[in-house]
Amino acid sequence: MRCSVLAAAGFLLAGCQSLVTTTKSYDVWFRSGVLSEFGYAATAGEMPVVVVGNPFDLPKPAVDEAVIAAMQGHNRGSAVRFVQAPADIAQSGAGYAVVMLLNAGPGIGADFACARRASFSPPVAGGGTTLLAVFCGNADARSWAYSRTGPVASPDDPLFRDLVARTTFQMIPPRDDDWGEGALF
Image (cartoon, rainbow, N blue to C red):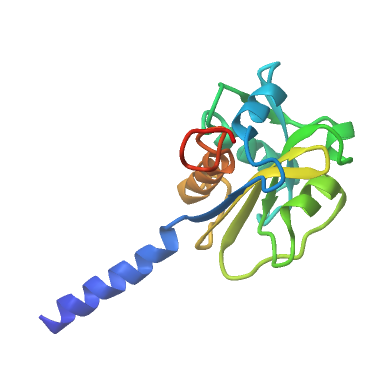
């Protein structure tokens, strides 16, 4: 009996490494309209994505491609196709884009990620896999979600794909207001 209880406890603790936990925030300056603004930014049906960081032993373009593929179909609002950001959007803090920051260490804020985008190398977090997803309007974060999970071996790992999908979904609020009553003001 004691062995089965210990085995069950060990199984539950081992399973914690496969959970994805998420923290999110919607724009504090523009308290409403993030869902609509995301739709407006993607009026052509596409949303540029800047992937920052590479925690895997793979070429960065392969990791970028895997992240963007895992994002497809996991956003709130209108259907959008996530695409690699052109260099002018990726290197500047101009225009709308989503920044996906892999294994961001402490101290990297959403506004900083929007302003600097692909022009910085983030400090690396240890002990697991993290993802900061930020919807940017120029150099300002409109909304963001931060998720973490246990270590993953590759971008093909189902846990990594789940991390990207859940974080992408949580990055955009479910409706335009954040007051909880459905009113915009």
